[in-house]
Length: 108
Image 1: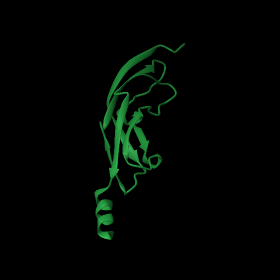
Image 2: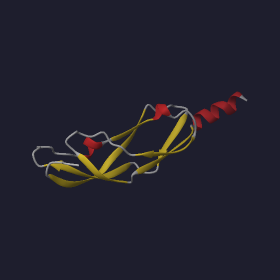
Image 3: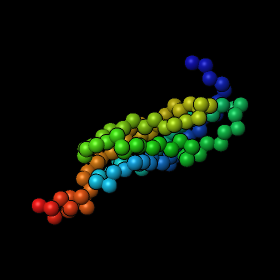
Image 4: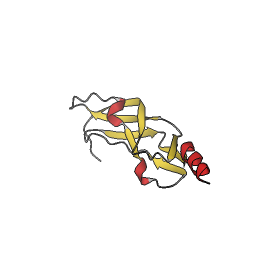
């Protein structure tokens, strides 16, 4: 593996966002943010911030309640190499939304 000379930088408090949530579910993440160690090549003028490495979970893939373990793989610029992600996995717990439970009880 050949990479250009790089500067190692730790970026903290990178947000984990939930997209396309379904109103019939409540979503709970085990952690709302993660940290990453990145290598930035010296020959680039990249100024990396937490918002550049945001991790978005598309909730439309989850169709039922449960606990899901998801590996964090942030979308990054081609000039970067991520060596360490902490935590490496995040837990997503999906439960039925309370308002939907109440609506079901009223129908019975």
